[in-house]
Image (cartoon, one colour):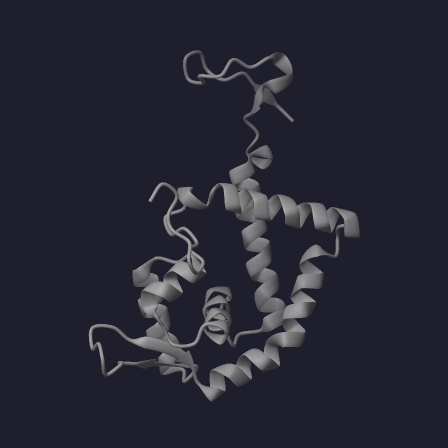
Length: 177
């Protein structure tokens, strides 16, 4: 792997020869994360099928655990921006997988809940979701799987606030808020 020293003045940290930065695209963390995402999405479609996208599946799973939440709360729990979540909710409603209900006490927003068809779809996907989990990690040993998942969770947790749409679980506030 070709390595190159950072340009003078361009890198604030002094690096020794053993800490030189790789200029090889295939060794860059961002590239590897993007490739891992591509692989994960491809495997999702191969195993789960065309019924839902990974983002739609995530939103439906959140609604299964948190019925009657508004779109902003769904966005926070899925780590999506509000406009994406609004269009996602419309598409899922058009497909009959969720319903958007205007509560009588406040007509400014809509509550979201799974329809029976949405709940049935999720129930039917359970075996495939387990298969997907296994296939995503099957090339690693059990110990590597645990390490990979621990490090991935740590990376996501420690960098959550750097996202355009940080994850906000119930009761969580933004860091520094």
